[in-house]
Image 1 (cartoon, rainbow, N blue to C red):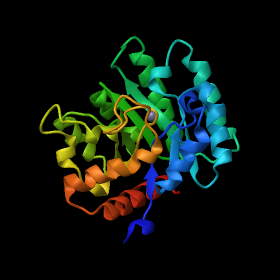
Image 2 (image 1 turned 135 degrees about the vertical axis):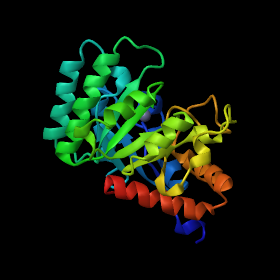
Image 3 (image 1 turned 60 degrees about the horizontal axis):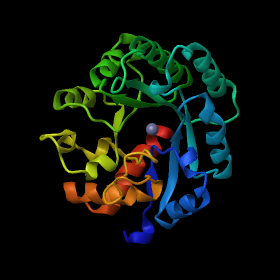
Length: 263
Ligand SMILES: [Zn+2]
């Protein structure tokens, strides 16, 4: 395969975010120029639904949406917000390819831990009802997420552990969930802080590529806004780490993403 024959998928990006309001068209053009041809955009909260939907309709066949309530947006008003998001997911006319971004985040604040758990269980149930995959965000809460996934009613939940950063033991545990894939993004290009890490266990058959734009930019863009056109930098790093040609990295991770999302 030569360069023209392969393409990339960004399985997790928020290009609808306000950080891209000034140059969204150029950002999308750079994606296409860098062969990033499919982008999956998970929702964050009720307010992000409109900008997300406008991107999906402007870039049909390139941008795909996921609908869900992000754990850092869970607060005292979660019931009403969950209702509005559920309404959009079940009754809207957008064909969402996943339930996301959902999960647990106890990094900054544990105040809403119990609400986060309730919201996660509810959204796992949605995914089962709609037979959709989930996009899981777990930060400082990997074992809590795995405990919930291990509950008997959620055995058939499938999807992606986005930006996985669990310990070795948690990673081994997460890998036992065979219908889950791992989203690998900019952090794989950062200097290792601990060893061994998740990246040592990496099996490309379980990996999808992601940027999480505008967050977590890969080297050499650290400190700047991230964007989906940087996906090849992540593929190159994986190629370097695994010794697998970049075209093959693209091919394997594309097949994984296409299979999960049906895109
Ligand atoms: Zn995200």
